[in-house]
Image (cartoon, rainbow, N blue to C red; front, side, top):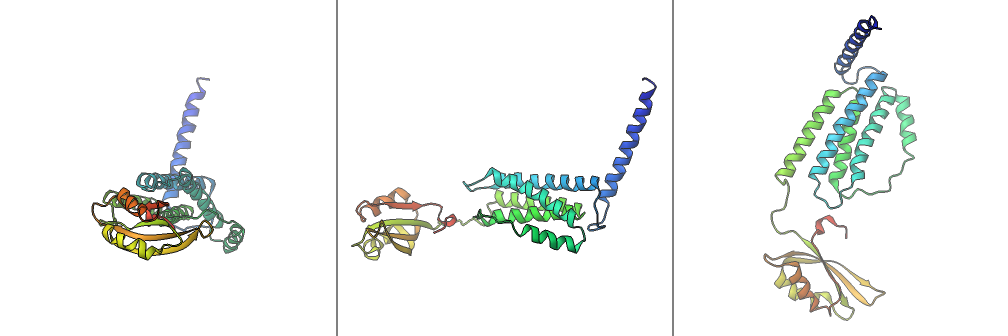
Length: 251
């Protein structure tokens, strides 16, 4: 057995050299070169795609300000990267395969609506990275990951695009049907808000009440509790909702 050890070590060294040569050959390939990716190169492409998108998912989690953060969304980004990379490997340069996969994937229907535009941007970034890995643009995939994550972190650190002034809020007020919102509420609104506008007016509880929704911008020093107290004195203590996240909510 002792005489077999040198042979085993020699075989291990040869295997390592061959593997390193194969990896160097893989990463030195020109983007889009060739129609077929071998087993090792396919594994490298999938692994690099997962690594890059995992970094993107961590960046998304670190910079997400929404209270509706979902762990499943981050995991879906990584799975989407694997699927997209495999699809690009399967397609290669074969147009017939491309049309076949388009027809096969067209049966998928997505039921969950993505509320934030930022989430859609991360989905497209994930697909771009995975497509780059699946078509041998490895350097492009790495560079795009680094640049996109760096820009995202910089925008998060400097609070890029934030409105430094007072933000608009949504104020929802229920009133008895005999009271007109314009006559009852708006004189008091002039004392509470810098600007206000009636967004919608609907009947509630089978026509027993009016429900008026206003877009309002509070004056400096006016708190939500002050707004609710002032409005409650005018609407017979019916329901009043003062929404601090109006810019993120659907009407």
